Image (cartoon, rainbow, N blue to C red; front, top):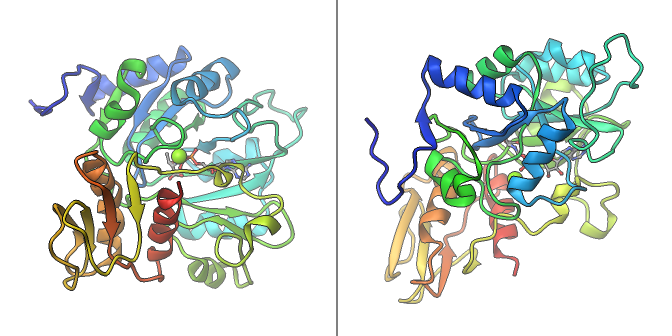
Length: 334
Ligand code: TXA
Ligand code: MG
């Protein structure tokens, strides 16, 4: 039996065949379920049902203009709902299942199938964000349900994304009837988002899969809307990227070369400053993948008014380091 220190809840369950059945029947009746993916935990509901999707927005306190990512078990299932262009097919073939979200044009409603993605899930846009996650649990549940799952990160809107079942419970409490415990997420930061709905592919959010990798696979230039375009000129951008996100309740400062005795420190590598009230080193070996995996967990642990602020050691701007720095930048905004 797993013992959950500090938290008394019967909502968190290890993944067994019975729990998969329970999740499937909750989802079929329009409820939400928190499900682990390789990036972060998702708060899932039937993407084809307005009522089910509304429950996600309600539980998260998410503004209705911010659309959701729709998760599929297989890329071939996406064609029923979205227009698959060549770049999408090539990226799917190369990467899926993986932590890459693609924004595609929605198919017109009067297609052969009368199933359609809820307009509430896409916030009324003509595009839809889709992903085939590298999570056996999530893909199994989608297959059992027979419909795709809309799933944002399973946290209160604007807060740090959860990378363990206990993080989900800490944020959403008993408002989620079932939280499936799949252990700590392997990637630890949310998926890369690439917009393929226009003429030129555009990165809308950094994640594990980098611009260089995408350019190599599709053999063409990609615009990086996060790093290369000034905020005022990003039009149209990913609606969710407008929001202050990932915010701990205390101040966070990046690129700290020294710390005050009242501060907590998120350290990286072996040359981090000493003297913080508490230090968590997210990768003593300076490995960026390991740092990404441990980042949100460290932010969750150090988000306490015991500390004046969270200082963070410099993180290199390469590979998944871009995603780490992006999340830290958002967390450091007041
Ligand atoms: O790794 C992930 O992507 C996780 C797991 C659960 O899959 N999900 C996740 O969802 O991070 P969420 O809701 O926290 O972030 C989704 C982002 C938002 O910034 C939203 O604005 C953007 O995707 N998005 C969704 N649909 C879009 C669309 N049609 N066009 C542009 N951006 C879109
Ligand atoms: Mg989120």
